[in-house]
Length: 167
Image (cartoon, rainbow, N blue to C red; front, side, top):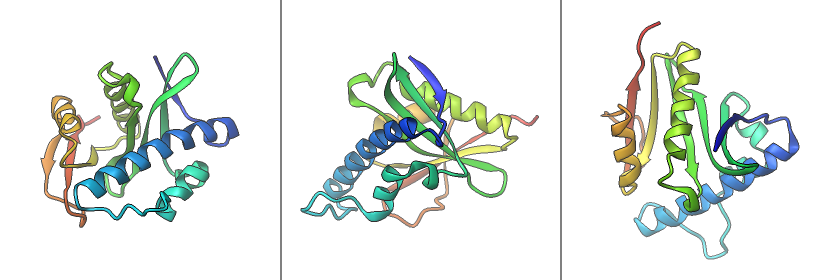
C-alpha cells in the first residue's frame, strides 16, 4: 500500500477520488439515518453539496491537500486536510474501503495528514467523528487525539484535536 498526494487537476485522479467520496458519503448517510440524525431519501440521491464533491473534487477541495491510499493502482482510501482558520488544519473525509480495514490504511492516511499539517506549521489537527464510529474514535485516541469542546452544531458529532509540537 502506498499513500500519494492527489493531483486534483488530473481527470483520472478526480474520477477515482469521486468514487471514494461516493462510497464515503453513501455509507455516512446510511449511518446518519440509522442513528436518527439524517434524512436518507427514498430516491437514493445524496444531498447536493455531497454530490458536488463527488462530481468535481477539484473545486470542492481547491484549498485542501488530498491523499489517496493505493493498493497496486487501486484506490482504497483517502483523507482531505483543509486549513480551518487560525493555526489548525482539519481532517475531512477520512475513508478506507471496508475490504481493507484493519490493515493500517486509515492510520497511514491520518499520519500523512498530520505530517502535512506539521509541514504547513499548523499548531493542531482537528476532526469531527460521529459518536457511533467507535473504532475510529479509538484509533484517533491511540494516535494522540483528545476530545475537545464542540465547534459543531450537528448532534452526535464529537470534536477531537491533536496538538502538534512547536517548530
